[in-house]
Each structure stands twice: as C-alpha cells, then as structure tokens.
Length: 414
Image 1 (tube, helix red, strand yellow):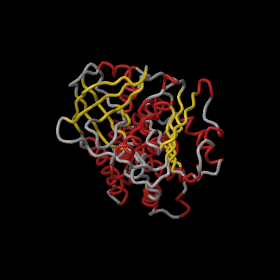
Image 2 (cartoon, helix red, strand yellow):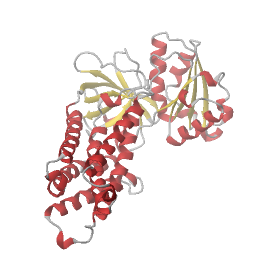
Image 3 (cartoon, helix red, strand yellow):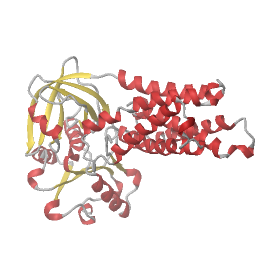
Image 4 (cartoon, helix red, strand yellow):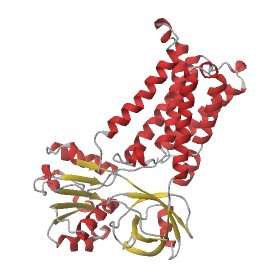
C-alpha cells in the first residue's frame, strides 16, 4: 500500500543534497563572486557528481527506499536523475572554459572527457533504444558502463577539483557522496536471493504461459498480492535477469509467473523444463490491495491482468468478499487470460466482470467505465499498456474520481 508522505520526504532529501553541495562550494566567496561562470562550473561539477552517486542509490533496490513507494516510482526517478546528470555533466566543462583547450589537458582532463562520452553513450542508448533496435540484453551491458563512469568521475574530481584536493568541507562532502554510491552498489550485490525450481508450465492462451515454481529450501518468501520479482532462469534459456509479476496468491504451495510471449527472451520460456533452477530477487512493488477496506475497481489491459489475478485469487482464497468490479480489456476473446478462473470467482457473488475486446469495440471509453456503480467511492487499480493507463486515468478524473483513489503501476527498466 503506497505511503503518501514518503515520496515527498525522499524528494526533500534529494533537493537538500543539491542545496548542501551549492553552499559548500560557494561558502568562502563574496556575493559578487558566487555567480561567476567559473564558480557555476564548479557547482555543476559537484551537482553532476551528486547525481552520479545517487544513481547507484536509486538502482540499489533498497527496501528502505522502495517500501511504500514502489520500485516503479523509484526507477522513474532514477531515469529523471540520469537526464539531469547528463545536462549537468555536459555544462560543467563549458562553464569552466576548458572545452577546446586541448593543449592544456592533463591525463585527468581526458579521464573526465571519457566519463562524459560514456555517459552520452549510456543515455543515448536508453532514450533511443527502440529506434536503434537495441535489445534488452545488449542495453544492459552498455548500462553497466555506469561503474566505469563512477570510477572515472572519482579520479577526475579527486585530482582536478581544487576544493577536494585541499581537504576542506567540499572534500568531506565528496567523500560522503562516494560512500552513498558504494552503499548502493553493495546493497544491490548483497541483497538476499531465493532459489526455486520449475515444477511445470501451463499454457494459458496461445501466447501466454504460466511458469510454476517451488522453493528449493523452506517456504515461499512472504509477498503481497500484486507484487513482482526479478527472475533468472537456468536451463536452455538465457540466464539474463528479467522482472515478472507474481500471478499466484500468497499462501499457495507454488509461485507462478504468467508471461506473455512478445520477444526473443519470453518466447524462450517454452524451453524451460521441470527441475530447471531459478533465482529470485523480491518481492517488490506497492501495487496491492492487501489490507485495504474496499470497495474495489480493477481495470486491466492485456497481460496487466497478472497482478489483478493475484489479488482476486487472494481475496477468493481468504473469503475477502468485498464489493469488486473487474473491467478487463483484451484484443480478442481468444486473448483472455484466466478467463475460466475469473468467471468461477465471479460466481462467488462479490465480483462483477465486464469485458471489452478492442479489436471490435475500441479502447476504454466513458460508457465502459459508466458500467461501474458508485465508481467515485471505489479504490481503483489500473494496470496495462502505458497509453491505456494514461487515457483511462484522464477519463476517470473527468468523471470526478479523486486521483488519490487511482493506483497504477508501470514498470520499465529503461
């Protein structure tokens, strides 16, 4: 369940780091010298290093940060921070007046230039990955250059930053930022992982399979309905890590991920066999109705039904018969996932289901939403393709639904 105040607290901490860097760089100067181009270059440099170090904190998957906020929100902020880093790093040498003065460059100037070039490569391949047709595995390899950028930025700033080499207040601030980055790296490397094995594959539709897993030791880790995990499968399949929503309910004897085949990796899921191993990192996410009073409205588009299915299974299993409505959109009837089970749950009396097939009926419109009685009083869980989420949310707000009642999840790794 989202913590409404925590994102604001995290944002204030983030802004405080930039204010502190600004004050530390400029504290010895008079007012007239504060906004000289050269001093602005120094400020942009320490701000760029701040953004760089925070990238490793934001990508650490720290439960301290993620809990009550959702990893999808943290990763969107990670993306915005990367763009800010890009702008600050490019402005830094221009404001210092060193661009083009190559004859005066030392080794450490070139190291800084190398860091910026790697940063340009990383940001460009992220922003234009679809147009450049860079697949996820190759993008991830390029993205790991962030570790080299940190090392190069560390060397560059240590040997050329006069405020740092003087071992004054800026040095200790710079050291603090470096410790933050190392904490983020160690947190990610040392996080607990769980070993599972495949016990079967279930064909849900013509292009969706559920992978059933059981733990090699002990019980399944605690998770809430609607959460997801990062998974590495080992067998006749790439061991590359991917994230999938857990479609099973807490308390079941097995864990399931229901995966749509739409790329090279997901197509290879069919190659998994019984006894193949899997390594899981999770759970993550604040997209859950666990502990909420209801009534609920679930709006699912495409494979977005998976977190909703986890919630419905949990409610049915635990006799949580709170007034609920499911609006489920798919391209055609043959694309419906969990159709029989959803209809079986609906027979329990607490769930009403409305379908919309976009190939013939078009996307969600106001008339489809108006099928739901007392829509303004419901806690709404909206999940699906990004454009569907955006358009549906606009319609809900136009109908007078409070934004505080609408919970969405849209997770992207790049």
